[in-house]
Length: 262
Image (tube, rainbow, N blue to C red; front, side, top):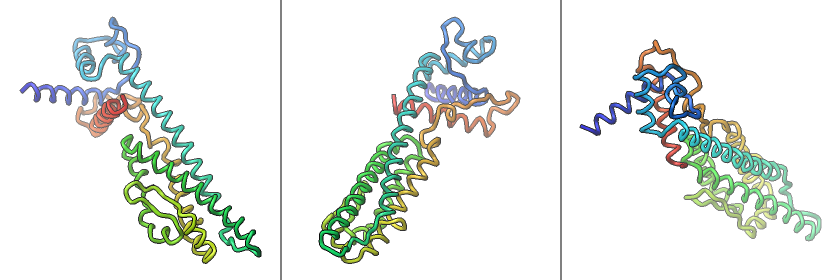
């Protein structure tokens, strides 16, 4: 019975908060309820505040957690920007590479081959960094999880990639270059290598994924505002409105993320 009562009280509380909006700030013990609701304290609002505090902590505690959350979001975005920028740079270099390495002399062919190998290996390193970054942060949000999955999709091209000396790890999505096999493929059929690794192949697909990550930057790591909302809902609306249900889900996600990171 106690468990049922606790669940019912929490559910009711979350519906109330969802309808009224929520503001976090520095709350003193003397005026915690007044600051929390932005209105004169009443016994019912005091009860709601006390109930919320018992579940999630006091206002100052919540404020500190949200500051830490914002810092984690900033760090994620910084690392995501750096990772995708490096990948796009290496992908652009590989797309513009001259895969026709066969020169007029053996020395010229070797120099051309070395240049292409350098671009392929640099690209693979940057691609693996992106795979690792998104995979290690897959629990941050469903969007990051889906992005991590897209970077593992090269396993579906494993046969063609392997033909030019690039293998994929089916579990992690990481790429690996066999320089000897790639060199052989370059000298034998540079057009095939270009088709597999160039702008219409691996490099092009990677660039598209990096651009997709950049486009979704603001949504990959949910911001605090998206979790707790900015504006209160008209109190004349029903407690069980669609907006209330959505806000309740947002608060639940906030609690989950705070527990996950802190």
